[in-house]
Image 1 (cartoon, rainbow, N blue to C red):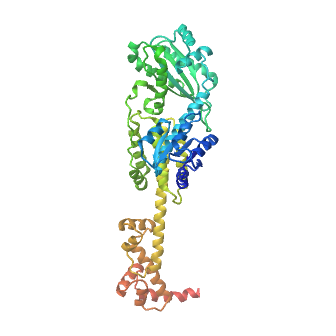
Image 2 (tube, rainbow, N blue to C red; image 1 turned 120 degrees about the vertical axis):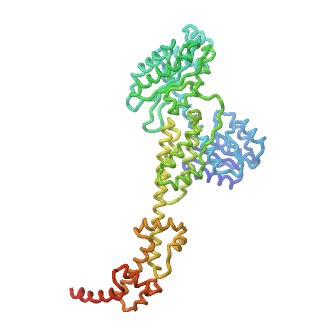
Image 3 (tube, rainbow, N blue to C red; image 1 turned 60 degrees about the vertical axis):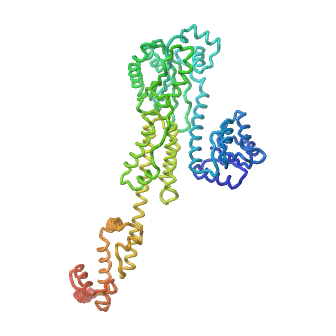
Length: 544
């Protein structure tokens, strides 16, 4: 992605460039110091995105936007201003600005705008590819000329002469609707020669409900990545009786599901059924556009590959993502199993989806934002690079997810790996703390050490610290400390002539009698007996 920053304040340019590179290291950032330089840079480099200040010398941002709106090159322009003036925002929108941000720019708001731009650019790229192939696939059931007339009719570009020709065929008049079918071949399983059979099967299935005419539309074209498969798009005009349309919809659904099943060994097929048109000649173009818009909602598995246009809500819905960032991060860090954070995420996205009524682009945008926040949460901690790479790869794949279940599966893998990484990091941290504690005990065992004092020293709850210590060493803190002290006592009793009370003091005991009791409990004999026994055994060992 190319991004042009236009601002006469160098500090703001550097700051904006830094924010962009922190989340998009692959982005090419270009800087211009005023609107005039920005216009030149835009014409030479043709960036995807232009982020421009409004008030600048030589040429202001609104004038720059006005110049850009006149040509065929249409970048996404985001306006910046330190002044929250409605007039500025109004002029910016009138000239085609994508969005309007106030200085100082918040990184989260910038990230949200760039994420929406990326989704829009991805959509436009797909539409361009589709347009490039618009003339490449012709119907196998009608002549090329007649098929072109049908396409012109659906696209709303049919000429007067073309209307007369279609009127003769009879396809142009009467009641009916438009079916939009998409077939995605499986890898290596669909051969070009099967195209005739596919068209014929779709047409014959729908002919049971009225006179049907099926034409092949352009495919999405070759993909950008290995393994991407083209898709075949079909439009079928069916003359149906409006009085029995609603009654027959359930039968149509069953027949379309059966059609999908017949072709399932070759690939995946879906259908969008348009609204009933009382006058096809006047309403077919609108019906076709309606099914194209509705087709995106087959992203949701709940429709099972068949969606009727009127099953979608007609109201404009407000979308909110009910997943608190703090709750997500806390669950990610503290849950024992990854299923807890995965369930939290799935529930939030299912609510956002509104039973298949929410725009898939909205869902994908929130998925992008969530993964970006999870990645940023890890920061630059050691050992997190693998999981950050997985998240980055998943973010790139979001736009390619063709179903809600595929998106959820991808998020599940990401969150599970993030949770695992966090657990490993916490485990490693605990081990380092306890290892440090063990070293401290060996160094300062003669002092009045206590579990409470060490827990405070390492900033842990006493109970939690006790559990950590026992899990790491296999012994309680007091048992471990006694073992260290007794080992030292045995060494002094064997190798020195120190008095018992001196040895007790050297091992951290001020009370000699208490030391003797602890020693006897540990070794099974008194300090004096242990010394006597060691002195008796040692000569024999030397002789050996």
